[in-house]
Length: 91
Image (tube, rainbow, N blue to C red; front, side):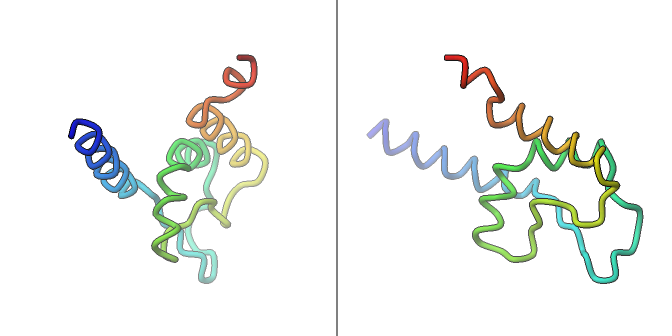
């Protein structure tokens, strides 16, 4: 019984946190390009955005309208810290 409640709570939390996924509209690429800080945020919410992306095409994982290297660097830092980084590889 406890295991079933834990699974239901975990699925509920994942569904709630997937609401944090950021949407980037790419039609015409208007607006300011995403920089380092937005890349960091997109990397941090990567697991939740991925889950949301499985159910909706309106959720983007990676901002197409970005500044290039600095966005990529922020994205990698955020994704690395969320997914465990190199600490898991050293174990």
